[in-house]
Structure formats: structure tokens, C-alpha cells
Amino acid sequence: MNKRYLVALDQGTTSSRAVVFTPEGDIMAASSMEFKQHYPHPGWVEHNPDDILFSQVESLRAAVRQAGISASEIAAIGITNQRETTLLWDRATGRPVHNAIVWQCRRTAEYVEKLKQAGHDTTIREKTGLVPDAYFSGTKLQWLLDHLDARERAAKGELCFGTVDSYLAWHLVKGHPHVTDATNASRTMLFNLHTQQWDKELLAIMDIPEQVLPKVVDTSRIIGMLDEDVLGAPIPVGALVGDQHAALFGQACVHPGDTKNTYGTGCFMLMNIGDEFRLSQSGLLTTMAWRLDGKPTYAFEGSVFMGGATIQWLRDELKMIATAADSEPVARSVPDTGGAYLVPAFTGLGAPHWSMYARGTLVGMTRGTSSAQIVRAALESIAYQSHDLLSAMARDAGQTPPSLKVDGGASANRFLMQFQTDIMNVPILRPDVLETTALGAAALAGLAAGVYRSPEDVARIWHLDREFTPAMSQKDRDKALAGWQRAVRAALYWAGDGE
Ligand code: ADP
Image 1 (cartoon, rainbow, N blue to C red):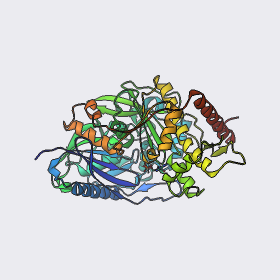
Image 2: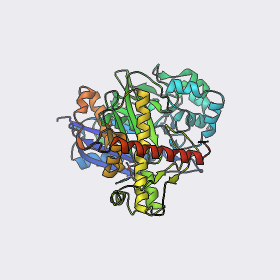
Image 3: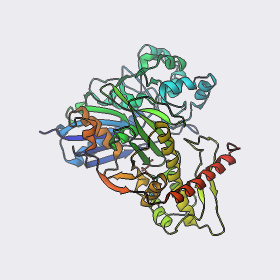
Image 4: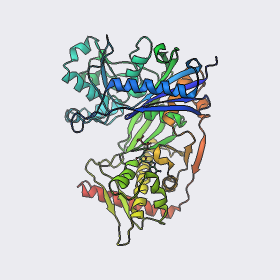
């Protein structure tokens, strides 16, 4: 039987998903299953590793059943995952020794403060491309070793650390390989992007024995065969890749300068910066885009904390709209915001403004300001924040991207996309397959299995659904951006950061 189909396992923060693709990149079937979030203390977030595994296997089986194909027709499986979430399990039994500590969990904020106080932030930044933060796996693993008193067992090689890709590979691939890929490794704060190795100095700083770490492999590479118990046939597992990196690949951003922005709860923007490691001057992260045949491709990464979440706030707190999709007709019902700007700095501002203390600010209102104008200002704020990220990236990379590829729930909003292209003055390209994370993982697996010959070959399965082109005059753009910058200054000033 012809092995042609590709399957992506997309293990996310709230659900596990599986998608079956044709070799042309079309979706044949998809299935997902949500699982429980655990909040043992304020600011702490955990997942039960059994839930992760169970929901992932169930959604895989359901998707394959729904596609009506047999397991032996699958050429390869790619695994993509929520990044940074940290697991620790017993090498002899495979049993987790603690719940997974989820990327959002703030329990190690004090560990990070200590690293900074000890003056390690520059070392971490220069070696890993990251700004030290409790998001990343390093201090989460440190916490587990401390609180479980497990350092000695770890040093004897009795325990395995891994991110979700590692955990799934260990449990689903025959022979239990203890591996992770370079994109996931690049989110641990322990991986040296220059040497492509776990960094001995950083391991010493965080007191982590090397024996606990997985072997780092290329992003696209057959790591083994799916255990026959899962689908009844052995299938090559051809990719492990962090979710944002998969989306960058699935958006066919395979050349330096190619950039994508995902408009979800927050926005995640990544720009391919080629094969040379570079640090941003604006506080963006440098990350591994992917590693193919031992050769790294790097990316800049930045995020907007409040993207689609701003629209949820309008819906749930201000009750100005009934559904997120209603924001579009409501925004279009007025010609402009009448000079009002919303800066949704509810949890501070990220790159390139960086203020933990900035707070939400609504400025420029008059007696005539309507709720429709506030809804419009909210949508515009998503575009302005993304604009600021893109211009920082373009400055740091020394090149403006030829276009911006978009995906995520809020990319369905045509008003937002048109305003985005107007403000950025860069064409926006929205593909027909919006499941770019799954597509990227499937494509990377297909590359390993020989379904595709090169990343350029993969780029041919990316298809445009709709292009948005700038229609705003430079004068209007300058005026709008100047107003936004003043509004941001107001949000910073409120926090005492702008004085
Ligand atoms: P996530 O993966 O972060 O859960 P999604 O990609 O599913 O996010 O997108 C959901 C987010 O997009 C929500 O915050 C929602 O408010 C926003 N959203 C969805 N549809 C629209 C729309 N038509 N206009 C504006 N925002 C939208």
C-alpha cells in the first residue's frame, strides 16, 4: 500500500490535537481532546502527564479513523508541542515523578531573580538567546530536583527530564528514545545556540546533572517507529518541533526575512534570520527556528501579551460585543476611533517597550466617543502592538520582510488584517490552511521520510487564501502611529516608567 499521508500530533496547553494531511498539505481529518488544568497555588499551573499522553493517543486514533485510512498508509508522524513545559520521569518505569510544570507557571520567579542578582543574565542571554524568565524549563527542572530531593538520582541517570516532545517520544516510540529536538532545547535556558550542545556552565549555575538531559536531535529526523500498540502498525516518527517553530515552517517562512504572526490569545511573531546567531537590541528573543542535517536556522521571536484576549475582555468584562467575530461589523460601523486609543497593557508591555508595570490605558476620548469606537480601538491596538514588534525585528535583522504571513483565530477578522497591512505598510498573506502548526510538524516529518526533498519543496504546498495590501497614505499612517506612540507613553507614564 502506498505510504502517502502525514500526521501531526499537536500537543497544546489546553488540548491535544491530531491532524491527518495529504502530501499536498490538505487536511483530511482532525480530532482534539481537552484535558484538565491544575492550579495547586495562585500562579502555579500543572498538567497530569497521563492526561497529556492519553488525550494525544485518543485524538490520534480518532483522526486516523475519521480520515478512513489505514495506519500503513501513513508515511510519517510529526510531533509539535506546547513549549517549555517541564517533565521528570523514572527511567526504569517511565512513570512521572511529579506533574508537568506548565510554561505559564510562575513558581520559579524567585529562582530567576537569584540568577539575575548573581549577574548571570548576560551569560544566559549571550549563550541561549533568551531573556531569563520563569517560563523557560531550566529553573522549573531546578525546582523539581530541589523539591523532590532528586539530584542524586538524576546524577545516577535514574531520572529523565524532558519537554512534552521528549515525553511523548519516550512513551510512543519503540525503544523509549530519550531525545528532544533543537527547537525545544532552545527554550530550556540550558542549551547553547552557538555550540548546539547543553551548556556545562549553565548546568553548573542551575545545579543540573547532565545525566538527566535528553539527547538533542535535528528537528526533522526519524527518531524511531511509533509503537505498534498505538495504531497497529509501525510508523516513522520524523519530527519533534516546538509549536511556534512548526508554525513558522508551516507558513513556509524558509528564507531569511520571512515572518509570521499568529493572532491567538496573545500574538506570536517569528522572523527567520538565517544561519547566523544574532542578538536583538530590542529585547526580542533569539531562538532556533529549526535544525536540519545539523545546520541551524535561527529566528527572532516576540510576543504581544494581549492579542485576541483584548477582544475577550470587550466581550466578557465590558460586554460591548456578544462574540469575538462581532468585533468586525461593530468596528466597521464607525469610520474611525475619533482619536481614541486603547493600550491593553493589562499585564504590562512586552517587546520592544518592556514594562512589567504598564497598565491598560484608554486615551483621547471625547464626550462623543462611542462603544463602537472603543471596539475599533481594541482591534487597532492588536495591530499597533504587532507593528511595534515587526519594526523592532526589521531594525534588528537589518531587513524588512517582503510580507507578513498570518494565522490564529483573530486572523479571520478582515478589518484587523486590513488595518494591520495599512499600519505596517507590508502586504499580509493569509493561507488557506490556518492549522500552520500542525502543517509545519507534518511537513518536517515528511521531509525526514522523503515525501519532500527540501524546505523549498515544502513551501510549494503553502497556498494563499487571501492577500491584504496597504491602502493608507503615508501621512495618515504617520499620524496614526504618532498617536499610538503617545498612548503607549501614557501607559508607561501611568506606571511611573515613562518619567
Ligand atoms: P489560542 O490558540 O491562543 O487559544 P486561537 O487561535 O484559537 O487562540 O484564537 C482565539 C482568540 O482569537 C481569542 O482571544 C478570540 O478573542 C480571538 N478571536 C477569534 N475570532 C476573532 C475575530 N473574528 N475577531 C477578533 N478576534 C477573534
